[in-house]
Image (cartoon, rainbow, N blue to C red):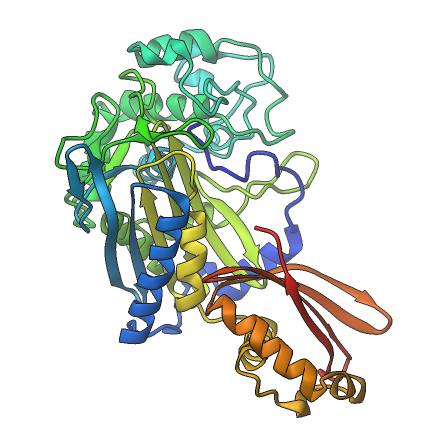
Length: 475
């Protein structure tokens, strides 16, 4: 449950060379982030409000709260819906949510800070701090922070198991789960493990002599003016913050149970408002808080012993978003879901928190990204063609002779009548790209205000469009 949803089963070779090239292009040694995005316009804010409002209505989530970073600054914060349902309490930009596994970014930061201080090394063996966790093949701190150590995850379920309804201690988790045989030899595979981050948090406390959250407060939260961060492990968030909600199937919304105290330590213990996390994102993209080597570790996916890499660095996913480097993490717990995405090359970050555990805020991030993140060249062209079809005014110079012949006046009129009813697009997603018959074929999923469409685009080597056919899609 407490994990980076959507990435658990995607271990292995994650476009090694592409990501390495992206990282090199961004200049990890001394990255100067370009000012690619300006503060949001009134139209962008209006588009975000309309799009997120549609998601809230269709998902049934009680609330969602967002923060948007552009140009190195927090450009927009907004909360939608109800933080609590009975009695109803409106969500505000200051409402705090449990962020669950996004906490892993901060546990990893604590280990990196201790390494900067010369108090430990990422390559230290876990057993050097907890001898009772010694294995035939030693696992390192780097491996537990990158989910390549093999420690069995104590919470793979998408509900709260009965054991986790009762309080526990760090030592109890280490004794029960840290002593189990490894699921694989360290460094040979990738498998999401909350257990590894409990161990990492315990190492922070043992080395620093401070509680984990106190250490983070002094070394991360205070320097970044993240004044609203709280420990959400030991007790539910206060009544002034978001309540946790769940539903079974498509049944009624009900309050979600709270995990027992102690289970979230190191892996998922933090609560905050989106604008607090946005300050952390700004520091990650501007590389302003930690030393260069620590940011190198955050930006670089961890290699396996067979030479392949993973999609994960230290508490962060690292991906190639159609030619752009993307960092991020999701969180999922009982009654809460969270999403955090950063595009360092565009100097854009988007945070979305919600107090439900059935509708992912990843879709909210995608909707906001459509508004604020500059599209790739192919996406920009596809967006323009789709908008022209909706308006019934097509630039025929974009098309091949075959394409022009296909676009008869009757066809254009029919497309306008049909497509305009869907309203403005909210997400434009490239589903696939391939070659056929000398053409580049791209399939786009278009989530519009009033439905989902599919567009199949074929283009020739000169850039002319042979085909752009739009049909009703599936959600």
